[in-house]
Image (cartoon, helix red, strand yellow):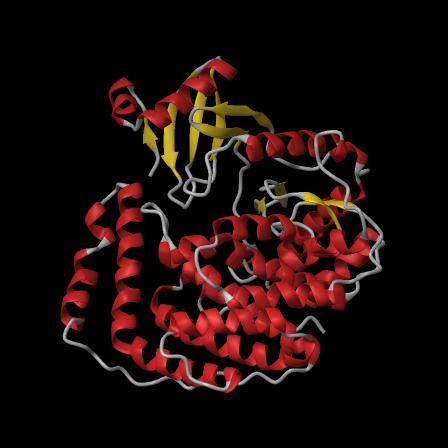
Length: 457
C-alpha cells in the first residue's frame, strides 16, 4: 500500500528504509514524500522523491536477503545497466549503490509485466517484437565492453554452454548439508550432453523474459543481476521458465523463430532444450541449502516449490530430448493422524487477512500459513508417499533402504558412479519422486501450479 510520508510516518518505518531514503536524498537532492513496500523474498520498495516541484519515481532493489548481503552483485548490475543504456537499450537508469542498507537505487519503469495482461493480440505482438529486438541488441554489443567492467570470457564452448551453472554449483557445494541425488544426476547429465560447437559469445541477461510495458509498448527491461558472457541460446531457454509465471501467451517455438528473424541468428532448438534443462536446475541449486536448513526468514514453501517444480520440468525436457517415457506415480488416499486437527487449526490461525493493510505483516503470515498447509498435507499423505518412494528406490538399488536418509545417501553414490546407460531409469525415478513432493505442495504452489514446459517443436 502506498503511504504518503510526513515526518511522523517516516519515523515509524524501519531504520533500514529511513537510511535508504537518506541515501536517495543525499545522492539526488530533494525529499522522499511517498513509499510503497514490495513484499517479496528480497528487500524492495518503490518511493517518490520530490525535487524542485517535480516527482521522481524510484525503485530500491535490495541485496538478496538471507542468501547474502554483499553489494558486489548490485554494483555489477549497475555497471551492466550503464553499458546497456549507452547502447540505447531501454533500462531503468541507475543512481548508484548504497552500502547500508545494501541496495541499488533505480528509476522506476512505468507499466506492467506479463504478456497475458496485454490489450489483445496486436498489442502483445508489438510488445514482444520490441522486447526481442532489445534482447537481440544486447546480444550484439561487443563483449569487450562487459569484460571492461569485470566479466570474464569463457575459455571454451563447453564452459560457455555451462554458463552460470558452474558458479551456482560452487555455491551449492559450499552450502551442501545432505546428499541430493537428484541434483547430482542433473549436473552429470548436463556435463555429458553439453554442446561442443557453440563458439559465438554474447552478453546474456540470464534470467530473461523480464520486462515492463504500457498501452503504447515496451517501457524497459529489468533484472541483470545474474548476467554473464556465453551462448545466446541460453537467454532463449530462459523464456521457458519465465513463461511458467509470466506467460508469453504466444507459443514459445514461435517466439524462438521470431527472435531468429529479428536478430538474423540461427536458433537451434535442441541447444535451447539443453539450456532449458541446465537453466531450470539453477533453482534447485540455489535453494537446496534453504530447503534442508532454512534460515528463519526464508520463505520455505516458495523455495521448496521452486526446487520441486523446476527440477521436475527440467527432467521432462530431458526426457523429451532423449525419447524417454516417463511414468508419473499414482497418489495414495488421505490418512489423517491424531495430530491432523492441531495442524489444521494452525492453518486457520495464520490468516494473512489479520494483517489488514500492513503488506509486510501479511507477507509474513502468508509465508507461515503456506508452511502450515504443507505440514498438514505431509501429515495426511506423507507416510504413504514416502513408503512408495522407498519401493521405487529398492528397484534401483536392489534392496530397500530402511529410511529416506539412507536412500538418499545410497542413491547419490549410485548416481556418481553411473554413466549414461542408467539415465532413463534415473529420469523416471526422480520425476516420480518430485511429483510426489509436488502433490503435498499443491494447494500452496501459486504461480508454479500445473507448471509445464511444452516441447518447442
